[in-house]
Length: 380
Ligand code: ATP
Ligand code: MG
Image 1 (cartoon, helix red, strand yellow):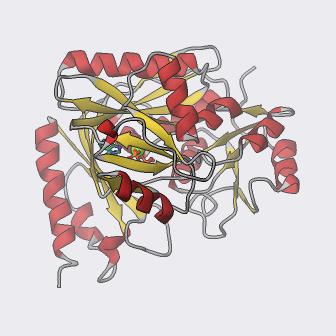
Image 2: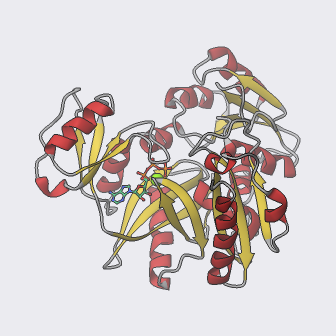
Image 3: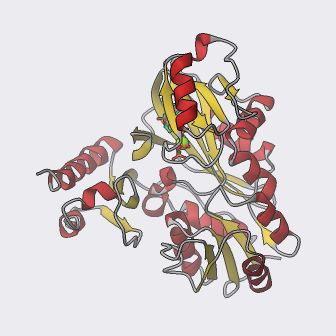
């Protein structure tokens, strides 16, 4: 039986992804209760009720399971145990097993490799709190990544040799890490997959992603890669969702190599920054799909109705004060999204804008002009 509008949905995590989920839920007439440990929560600001507590807080979890018809997450570092506990009495998606795989780089890589998905060569470093010898020097130059809690390129160090590896490992607090070979990428792409409780599956158009300092900067959609690669990426992303028996919205990030090979970089058990374009450019957004799946409703159509470019707005842009929003809003076919965060720190995701146009090239050149203009304003 589907959960009907009017019901309360629970959300673990109160960041911008949760805020956009909450707004999508409101469009469909649902109410949302948000749980987050930080009082200044972008999702909490728009929720029907905000509970400020840890994700393990048994009282908070009890309130959610008593009041909500179904519960989801917007943050992969939710303790899988909390999801398991909630699932005893409540509909929960995605499930704890999928989240626990996606939240740990080692489990994630082992799952992908065991199921035949191509990934970058890697080794586990320091599992027992000390550095394990690398079996081959072929992984240098490489990237040392903490196995848990990394995001936006945080918890990562580029290393060229064993000495640098040891220094980087110390610098990362001797946490268990993976050392990944630095791959010669021609581009990066991602696919958002929505998979319902009945196994119904919809993939979104493929996004081409450009990162700066490990943080997503721009997504260009449709990706400027051959049609075969588009289909292959959508096929692989669907297979990942099926192998996990995943229910919910999943993002699969890929590296594209020179010879056209696709490697899976990582997966995220939730909507993703690289899918934000879907709010303005698709019939159904990634957030609406998350609501539909959670409520056991039919999936929406993911057709792209316009070429689109999404640009992230980081806190750096606030360096000399509030950016010139009237300038952004006066651009035709441009949509501005701000997350209501009160403190603009460098590197913090404060919002994004999307530019729609007939072709990705047109949308891209317009988006870059707007971006450059905003960046000009913070130059001394
Ligand atoms: P997020 O969760 O925000 O996507 P993250 O902190 O989990 O980011 P990754 O996706 O692992 O980080 O890496 C961030 C970026 O660093 C990648 O999108 C890519 O640009 C670059 N990168 C990571 N690993 C490699 C690699 N093995 N070879 C080349 N580039 C890499
Ligand atoms: Mg990533």
